[in-house]
Image (tube, rainbow, N blue to C red):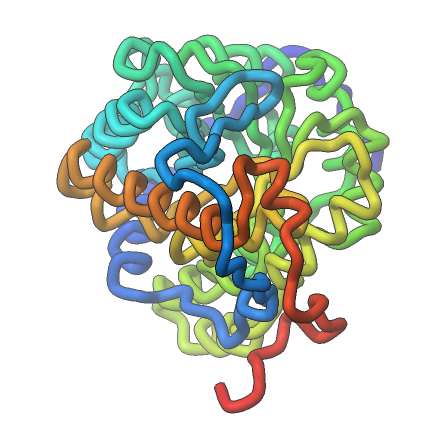
Length: 366
């Protein structure tokens, strides 16, 4: 059956436990659930060391852009959330840190806020705390065949004063989740409709299983401006849902997919090769600034991190700022030791070995 066109809102009520589920997601990630049985593939990207960089470390230019908007450093604090009360504190910490360091911020899903018409930390205050950095709204792509329409997309952007909208793809998570969305027919058509309504301002993001070359090309043809690969090697949300499950069979269902997905390294290359002109956000298991340098070398314009910054986000804005500042220092050091005066030079930095075809597999001895 052809899904209805994306026009006005037809949003049904939220499941009564959705807030509690979001809180459980945070708890499980903090406890280490979702750790995959695979790697990002970034460990295979080995820079050639430059013993004569002929550079001043402190003068290396880390500036970047995202959707044409300037960044002091090429980082996106990626989407995360919790139950309504918890999300408010987390988002305040993230927004204040993003503003301090000049990096981008993507909020977690605004589904609850839209359906209940209450901000829960996702209101105009967020933009007031981060007035000078790119801010990205976020909704699930599958929701646009479940009642959401263009008005909801616009409201998600307007409610936080966002510069762009992320539509996230999470078929593995939804298939494992009790009560998840199992019918994804027509999602691409809805993505294209939102892209047409928000030209140059739509980002599509996977949530831990990566992006293939075929999907990248389809998203490019649909008018998507940027793709956040969120490759395998980072948090596996199928495993997180498995950890939440009370049904042993559902846990076993998820466990079989511990190594599922396209590695972050391969996903970045896929998008770069198959979707020229589409901006690439490299995320999925980014542990430090050296991983960020590797992702940029493969073709990412901006690098995203979520689970890595989550512990700091539950503490304070200062803790988040210190965490991201360290990533920037590590990235700067990678530039220095490759003789790269800026990120454009880093993308041309010599490598010791090419990325192998099996980049999603652990290296020998691991």
